[in-house]
Length: 121
Image (cartoon, rainbow, N blue to C red):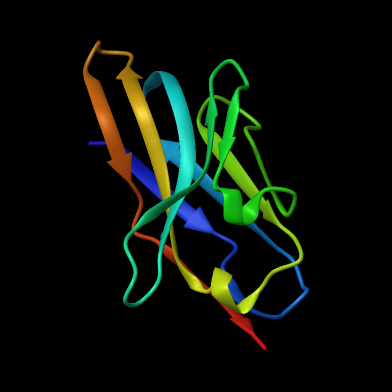
């Protein structure tokens, strides 16, 4: 089981910025894609952003032009969040897709514990 550790959440005013980071631990050979989901009270969990090992990206329509996802290494992913809105308030979960360990073990999907992002009006 992969361990995904998130950091960077917090409380900001509307219009402010936060940068989320996530690191996968373990003897990992490769990760096909990483990204971020979020879930707000009373809402379904939604995919915010995703980036593949080849650099391709996907964004939710609600965050296009405001958020940017990147990978520093094959085991890390970042989410730069700008121009934050109160509706961005949610628990953000790091996601890893297609994790291959050095041993050859393969995990299709893994999630972190989540980090709270709160945007005040």
